[in-house]
Amino acid sequence: MILHEVETAGRSQMERLQLERLQHVASVVYEKVPFYREQFERRGIKPEDIKSLSDLKMLPLTIKKDLRDHYPFGLFAVEREEMVRVHASSGTSGKPTVVGYTQNDIDMWGGIVARAIAMAGGKPGDVLHNAYGYGLFTGGLGLHYGSEKLGMITVPVSGGNMSRQITLLEDFKPSIICGTPSYVLNLAESMEAQGKDPASLSVKYGIFGAEPWSDSMRKTLERKMDIKACDIYGLSEVIGPGVAMECHEARDGLHIAEDHFLVEVINPDTLETLPEGEVGELVFTSLTKEAFPIIRYRTGDIASIQHGTCSCGRTTVKMSRVKGRVDDMLIIRGVNVFPSEMEHFLLQINELAPHYQVHLKKKGALDLVELQVEVTDECFSGVSNDLHHDRLNELERKVKSLMKDRCYVSMDVKVRAPREIPRSEGKAIRIVDLRGEAMLQ
Ligand code: DLL
Image (cartoon, rainbow, N blue to C red; front, side):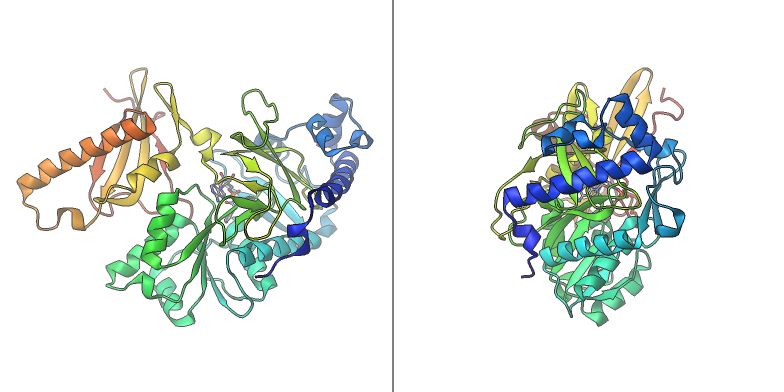
C-alpha cells in the first residue's frame, strides 16, 4: 500500500498546515482578485483577521453564479503568462463555468489523483483503462495525469466506441478501469450482448464517480465485472476529480485531500455551519491552487463529514457518499427524495435493469412525477402476449409500492422495454424536466 505521510498526519499537525495555507490563500485572493477583495471589504474583513481555522466562517461564500458573472477569466489570480490550462463544465443553460491552472496546479492535481488511484488499489507498472471523457471535462485528463504520476501504464481511451473499449480491455489487461458508473455499466452490458463475460477480464478495481451512484449500483457493477468498486469525488470549480476518494480497504466514506481542500458542511437554507455527522451541503476552500483559488465554494452536493482514523491507516477527514445535488432533490407532495435513493431500491427488483429516468411533467398547475424503469431481457423471454401484459401491470404495481414503502413517495411508474431508456457516454441523465414543454391535458 502506498501511503503519503500527510495522509496519516495527526490532527494538530494537519490543522497547523491548513491554517498556514488558508492565511496565504486569503491574502492572495485579497490582493489579486477584485471580486474577493470587494467581498472581504463588504464584510469588513482583512486577510490578517484569520487567526484560526474557525475564522473561515467569516469569509464570504462563493456560488456558481459568481463564476458565471466573471466569465471567462475574471476570477483568476495569476497573469496569463503563468497559466497553462483551462477546463470548463457545461452549464444547463448559458455559458460554461471556466477554471484555470498553472503548471504548479497541474502538478499538484496530478499528485492528488495519484494518491486517489493508489487508495483504490493502483500500483506502478499496472495498466489503467481510462474511460472518462477527455476534453474540457476534468475527468479524462484529471485521471490521466494522476495515473501517469503514480507510474501506471495509462490507456487514454476516453468515452465512446464500445467495441474498441472491449478489445483494449481484453488485450491490454488493465487492473483498473475508470469511468462514470453508468458508462462502465453500459460497457459491461455491451460485452454481455456480444456473448462475453465482463467478469473474465483482468480488471480488479473500478474507480467510479462524477455522478451519484447507489450502493446497489456498486453491487451490480462488482458482480458483473468481478471487481472492487471505489467512489471518486470532485468538481471542476475545486480542481476536478480527486478532491475525495474511497480507500479500497474500508470503502466507508471518501478521504478528503484536506491538505489541499478545506471542507465544511452547511445548512443550504440558513447557511449555518453544521456539526460533524450532520447531512448538508458541502463547501470547499482551496488551500494551494494558484490560478483559480476558490473561497468557501457551495458545491450543491449533499453529504456529511466525519473525523477519525480509518482502518486503512489514513487520518484525513472523510465525507459520506454524495446523496445527490440540492437541485436534483425531488420534492414530491412534501417528501424529499434523491434519484440515487430510488436507484438503491429499484436495483433490488430482479426483473429490472439498472437503468431508469425520472420525468417531471406538468398537468395544469400540478407537477407530475413519472418514474421510468426498464426490464431485463430475461424478464419476458418465453412469455405469451397476454401474460406479458399482466406481468407488466404487476411489475408497475410492485415498483409503485416499493417507492411508497421505502422512499415514502407516490409516483407514476412506466415500465419500458430493454434498451429503451437512453444510455449516455458520460454522466447519466436521471432527471428529465419536461415542465417547460406543452402542458398535458
Ligand atoms: O465530475 C469531476 C470528476 C470527474 C469527479 C471524474 C469524479 C470523477 P464536474 O463536471 O464539475 O466535475 O461535476 C461536478 O459532479 O458537484 C457532483 O454533483 C457530481 N459528482 C462528482 N463526483 C461525484 C461522486 C466532475 N463521486 C459534480 N458522487 C459534483 C456523486 C459526484 N456525485
